[in-house]
Image 1 (cartoon, one colour):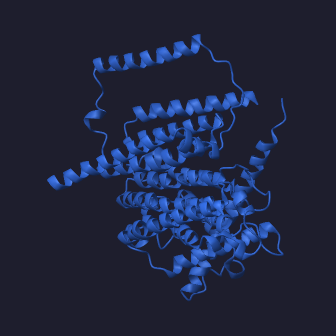
Image 2 (cartoon, rainbow over the protein chains, first blue to last red):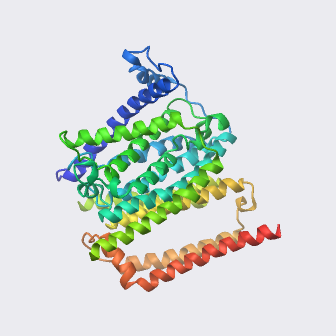
Image 3 (tube, helix red, strand yellow):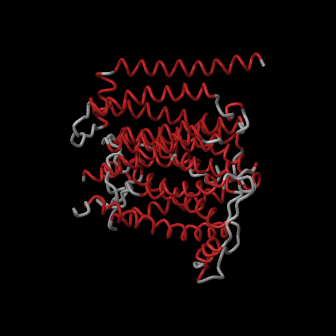
Amino acid sequence: MNAIPAELLRILIGLVAVAASVGLIGLVMVWVERKVAGHIQRRPGPFEVGPSGVLQPLCDALKLVGKQLFMPSGADPILFWLAPVLAFLPVLLLFLPLPVGDGLQALNINLGLLLILAFSGLAVLSVLLGGWASNNKYGLLGAARAVAQSVAYEIPLLLSVLAVAFVAGSLDLAEVVKGQGTWPWNWNVMTQPLAFLIYFVSALGETNRAPFDLPEAESELTAGFHTEYSGMGFGLFFLAEYANMVVVCSVATALFLGGWHGPVLPGPVWFVLKVSALMLLMVFARWTYPRVRFDQLLVINWKWLLPLAVANLLLTAFFVKLAQFA
Amino acid sequence: MEYMAKIAFGFYTLIILAGSILAVGAKSLVRSMVGLIATLLGVAGMYMLLNAQFMALMQILIYVGAICVLIFFAIMLTRADDGGEEAQSASVRQNLLALLAVLSVGGILGWLVLTRPLATTGVPVEVTIEKLGLGLLGTYGLAFELISVVLLVSMAGAVLLTWERRNGK
């Protein structure tokens, strides 16, 4: 028997670390989200369990695990249970190519960005399957909305990412980070502010976060695609949503905000700080902006984000060529 | 490492076969589509095995992430149930013809593989995206542009079809 190859071991360790951190992030984000929501609505949020309610997510998780799993009659049993698993599994893969620090990367692949974009597309499939297999009209409506939304928002997202890839000349996230400097004015966000804005708005749309959480709009569709899911079926969708948020924020950090670069503090700390700041921004956006109507959602995308992203890409290509000749 | 490659090959082949059987045989259209997705993922795995990472990821991004989602959209909008005429079992003649088609293609391919075995080649060299881009826009520029024209024509055709129906009501 040969020894296990080092690359395989690296991926295994990375997977274990990712699985652990996804669980931890889920717990922390539930607390942060409820606390922020509480304070924005002038109430304290959870504070009974533990100091300032920090143990509340643990109780929530225990409750979710302990709940009975229901399946509506007439639902497709295989697809119904496949959907939450399919929502969660690709997430583990999405974390692998993220460059947390210099050389601190679970999977060093030169197409890391493409890997993330490819596998994040599986998320919408899980929403579709879940909504369809529930045999529920709200579920189906949520799924139908999810398709139109994700097909639309994926395009400006890709175009804005492409603009940065043009400047950096690489699809390797670690390479893109290495091309940026220590101070904020050396980051890509200074040369590509429009791309950053487009990326962030499209990322909100892609992760189904408010104000673009149309597939699960509570006021119209009860809970949209996950109406019929109870217990950990819902829990997995929920966890996947937070994990996807972390992924899009990490990609934004690596592409636009200089990744692990930063003065004084060590790299991974800076990375986590920047990702947390973006996550907090997403949470603030959720609790301050009202949900858009569906036609507004599509108008924002097709009439604003898409033309702007194309124009930005063309301008970037022009200047990159100009810089090559100069 | 060779036995690992063989295990991976067997695994992907299994996924492709099971997925395609599900895609053709399932009663429910959505289940068929899940089979199709499994097949496409298996093919992506095969690309990975050939050290064509870019192809594999593009396969997932475009076929699984975009095309399957659009197919799903069509299924959902038409709300096709499994009681249509396609769901009826086929006649003996149709089955025989299908068997003939499978046997002719499978027979030729199997005969080729069995009589002209290919010596195992080494680990394929990975083609970088730079090379791929230069090839597509340089050496094979004409073919590349022709493909885009074909895509444009099909897109225009789809728009035209819906346009006529909308006007005719």
